[in-house]
Length: 234
Image (cartoon, rainbow, N blue to C red; front, side, top):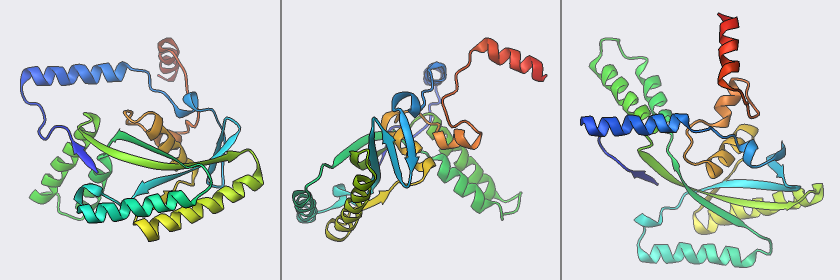
């Protein structure tokens, strides 16, 4: 589900000045790292450990109640209630509104346009459209509502094994009985990105992108250190 906050870019001088001021304010804000907020002790076998407990996380997708009839909505809701009434272990649902990463669409469009001639009007149009997609991302004009399901257990390997069995049951039950898709988040990059999206939904940069550059932990430095490094490198 996407929410378009503003359909057209600002063109007036006042709107342009306000937009530039907002971007400058955002750029001066401290960029937090999930590790600074949640002390992740370990990530392995699709689970992450924090505060002495193991956690499994799933992305919830597949059902849009806004386009269903009342009868369909009631049937889906009753199926979900029936599933939750049958389980005897705690389940946590988290929902937040995050900035949609429209740059992914921009990259896909550019990849499709690579085979077109350089002087093609369609290729030029695609490039302009891709730039607009990226601008919308950094201007935070498109928001998406995202939900997760989280299970947890104490720090014990046997408990973790049972927790994975419970997750498997929920994935199957929600898909077959309620039409809800639970996608387990298992690898390191996905876990970090999803935790980041939960606790810092307004930030655009994702930990996995920083990890590609070799930054897997919070990095702290001041302006003087940066200047000294650049002067030595130059």
